Image (cartoon, rainbow, N blue to C red; front, side, top):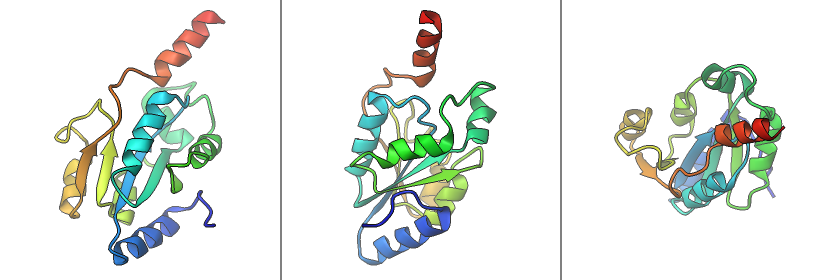
Length: 158
């Protein structure tokens, strides 16, 4: 069995090999700071889009860059390990940049899967995905779950 946690170079090779076999590659990404049912539904729906699902997890520094100090509450290597444990996920990479653009350029997914808080037109990297021959897919259930809200609730209860 192949290891699930891989680096970007390994992900690029796997994606290319998958496409050569006439199979498809999906990319999902996020911080996954407090794993919740919305994440599970998003990743399961992402897997339904393609033969191979690669999940890109934001590094600690990139999460801090857009969520602020005190985030993430779970370190990136542990968040990646949690995502690796999910049956629907084939491989996981951690990326240090503020956006997932370098991951998209490296693996050239057939589908970039984003949650229902986006539309196909509002996905920041959508034009890049389309320019590389891919499609944007909006997947998962309504955005009724939120790690930040869960963290606030925990802090209020404490």
